[in-house]
Length: 176
Image (cartoon, rainbow, N blue to C red):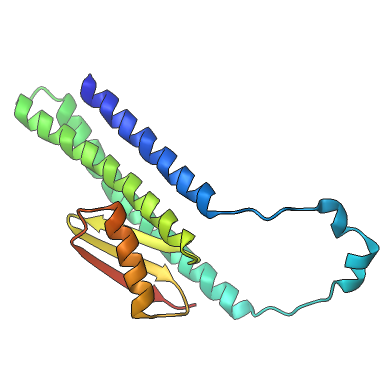
């Protein structure tokens, strides 16, 4: 019973941490809706052309990231279902069930950590990021036009600060 409480506590705590990081990093600017419709602002408004290729590229990168996220989520969901079946089965010993339960806890921790790291990386100014944790390896794909060792080092530092188990961090920049 205590393990379930601790799992829920860790899950809720990580969710609160992710939301806190998101709100702290996102400083909203004051919005004056009435000023939008004044005569002065209407005269100042001009049409600006945007490059649709950058938008299409970003959308395609984000879609690729979403597909990869869904694949990882599906694989982990299947593994979680297998482990849950193992925990509920009478065919396994208490040690095997305990090991399966610990693996489920680890999957939950990894899922929440990946989400938190993605938010942290986005808060560094990147449009989108995909984080995958595989044992001690952390694989990161970031949407950015700029590729520099300084930016990669900044991401690696942020990841290692939040996930000390990350011994090997790989950052890949995908340009728009």
